[in-house]
Length: 263
Image (cartoon, rainbow, N blue to C red; front, side):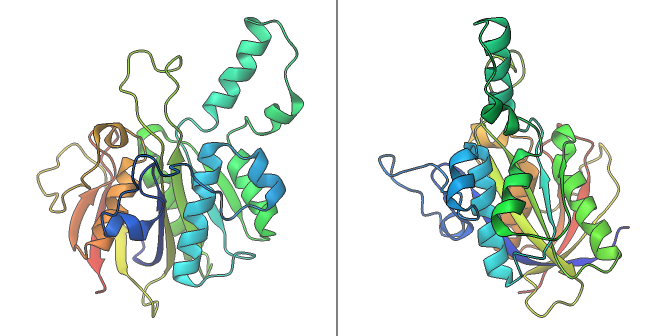
């Protein structure tokens, strides 16, 4: 069994639900309202450079840090994404091989997998540790494991955020497609005064009979996202659930979380 830690802050973005409060209240934006992320954690320059996924990450991190009351200039941020900045990368490849035009250096700098974490660190003047992780449908579990590792070494708080942009049709021709989804948790040592819940990450496996917490009610496009498990965890914490849930929707290795509500 892994280290038991507290969850002290939550943040999320998906089209129609711009933050965790809107999701908890099931207060979906009308179709004609702006449904794009604002990039709240970015400064003006880096907000222009960030992709839609990057801006969603910025919104999640800003909300989670504010709700936990942690310092944006020192708190480590772990960014998990299955395909990263795939749309930017595919656009550059199209320029090279199909249009036979020079690639844009500006676009190239934000096409790498750690673009969002880099822009976030610069904007927030964050001197803490930051890294980017990709583990396909196990990205939520891998991101949380990285956060647990930092807490085990004495870190006071860490933000774990998972996001993927809408899947490019040209990249995934056969696999199910998904819509943009981003969710973030602030983890702190067990016993934190402002804990919303406590969790451990248990072993993985195919046997899901002992899973007692139902996944979030997500539309198909969001449920297909590799980051749906992070949203399931956030939703369970908001609902005050205790029990076991799985960090994927049957497409990963089946890492389990034991969750205990602090409410």
